[in-house]
Image (cartoon, rainbow over all chains, first blue to last red; front, side, top):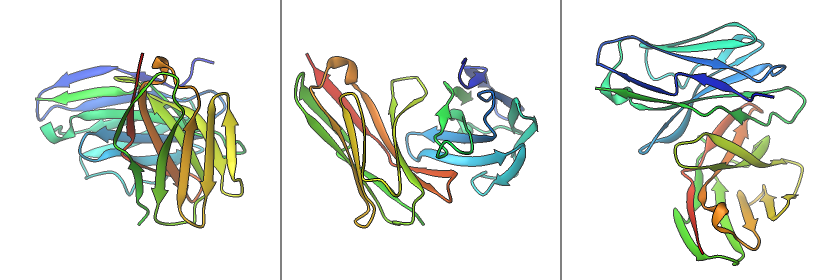
Length: 114
Length: 111
């Protein structure tokens, strides 16, 4: 299995630009999670989907952030407009119902907003 | 609100020693607890998952225990090796799906 796939691995953009992060979960997994990791706040859950439906987006910092999961094998996290404080590593993870919800993480996207 | 604390924040030990990493959480109503390993610039690798009804899990040189009533978990690493150097993260699940993470323990094993 290829594991969770994220792209791009690194993204550098200027303040005000739109940023789109992409994730492909492990085949057969029905839950998908987006996390953000910073030195100050550690790892925080932003949003998660179950069977492609957003279940909890209470961690999304503000309206500039949006996430979609159009099908079971693809999800996007979009930031528009981006700000320097959005600089962080964004992780995607997936899990499967019936496996005690063990989460498997992708390699992350390191976002730098200048 | 669930809070997860890991102590110490950093630990440096000589190769071959046995060591214990600690994790505490404030709300005992958890579904499970996971220990992860994170190498610099990399994603998280799941090491062990303990269900709320279990007391411990073992994988190779790793043993994780869970005392839900006291809100504590430990990760025991036997016969440490330089390749064990990484940051170890503890996370508890709320409502089965939401993981709340500690800040991690940065472990260095000196040859």
